[in-house]
Length: 95
Image 1 (cartoon, rainbow, N blue to C red):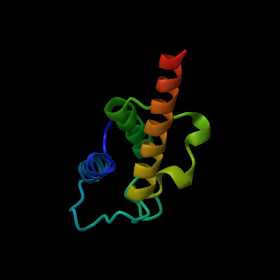
Image 2: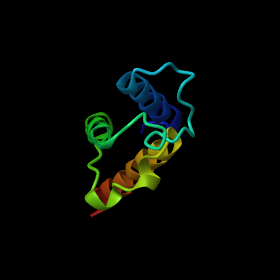
Image 3: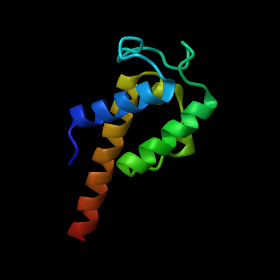
Image 4: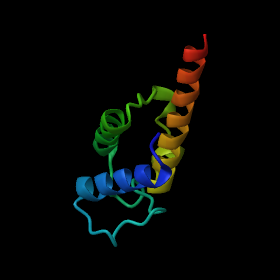
């Protein structure tokens, strides 16, 4: 299972590279969309990155500000989905 700090590092690194930002420009609570680091196209690329990196499919009803407004929110979203996925897999294996 991937650890929270690993998820954080992956997400942070992706965001810094995608926005061509210096590591000091974006903090964990920086509002990425509100401050202009991401737009709707950036969100689509971020969702693709999450799918490819963490094997998480983001559903339409999960595309809300609360899940993607900052690095901390994105990390929490990924961790929550990884935990749900793990629970789902354990249920399948128990049947």
